[in-house]
Image (cartoon, rainbow, N blue to C red; front, side, top):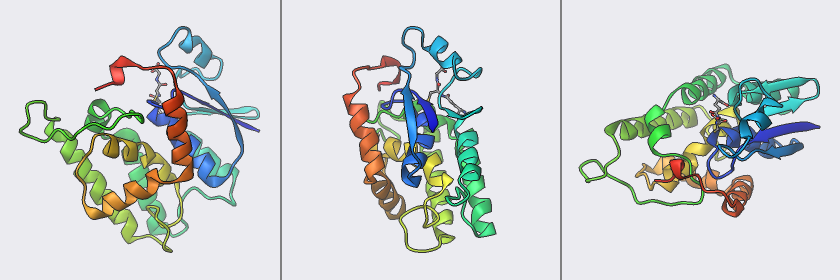
Length: 221
Ligand SMILES: N[C@@H](CCC(=O)N[C@@H](CS)C(=O)NCC(=O)O)C(=O)O
């Protein structure tokens, strides 16, 4: 049995990625929840990973940490449930947009913290408390990347490449962020966000986030 160690469901965007992937793929796992930034949480994490961060996957003798490494591991481990699209061009694009998400979008991450419980009004450029313009630049880049993925999709599924892939898992927290900060989006991105948030597994994550007793002021806006 796999064990996935994750943080607070309300705030831990990195934790959501492998969790939602496992759920969407129908792969059974045990869950260990660590309440981040509380008490001895670093000592709890140190039991699983020298990196001291969530998510961590324990798969028998193998321990994998870092969201993208975990997703790659799962794709190899369950070859009947591949993580990447089959067509080479789509696969190359899926890898690129996943790595782009993993390494980038700093303005979005820092300003629009994932906070599943909340919906805030949008803060447009020009408003007194406007988000920095980099946020809108990054949102436009995400919309363009999603459009490029959808152009290479196979089948008629709602996911970036038609069938579910690692790319959808990597962008899952972005769906909460775009909705949670009422970010204005074009019709393609709106449809994708709505479809992702309606997934039963996303609803399950949301219900658990709402039920969590902990509030972390540093991530509240
Ligand atoms: N690049 C890592 C980032 C992991 C990360 O920053 N996790 C955060 C929670 S979302 C964490 O564990 N924070 C606790 C800490 O830094 O002490 C990944 O992809 O998994």
